[in-house]
Image (cartoon, rainbow, N blue to C red; front, top):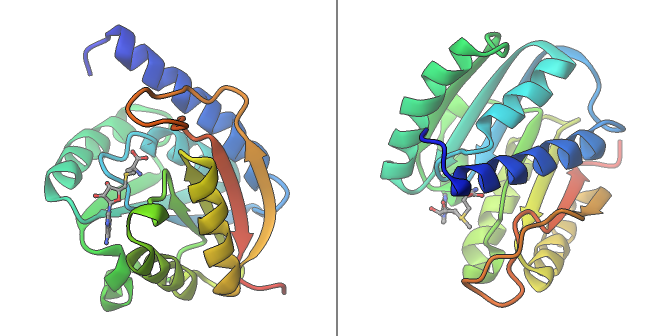
Length: 204
Ligand SMILES: C[S@@+](CC[C@H](N)C(=O)[O-])C[C@H]1O[C@@H](n2cnc3c(N)ncnc32)[C@H](O)[C@@H]1O
């Protein structure tokens, strides 16, 4: 990727995301030989390197799957990350990205039962019924000790998504308001990874 002032901003966003996710996961994610993560509505999956690094700190090997409805972004993600992870220290992480609807997650046998479901900049406000389905099917897919993590651009959207997840039976076990969130000018109140929250599938 060419180095521009914009890529520098993206790198700063990712550095904050890494710190916040590490803090959020630490009390809840136990070390395992193998960990799997499903990155839902991942777009280009810019955060893949961060996720791979966090998984490698907690496991000997890991698998990261990304899914989005948009084929062009999924193609970009496959092209970039299959190569890039091989060149970094995260060589024990395999990745693949699939074009598919998150609200039809239960149709996909190749997803298995991930340890973590991740949704960066969830978009609940945009289509509540669809995102309720995405949340519901992500919870259903997770293994019984599974964790679901969301980040949000907007205060109200985060509040509504948290309420929707709680109504679906998820239990919120942590949250962070990102002190380094970068304000975006394309919509009032929009800010990169402004809120993060972590949920357990069950109280067990
Ligand atoms: C706000 S963007 C976030 C993208 C990425 N996670 C990020 O942080 O840059 C929301 C994403 O949801 C995806 N999306 C919308 N509806 C979807 C659906 N039904 N299933 C899967 N992805 C969907 C869009 O294509 C878009 O990439």
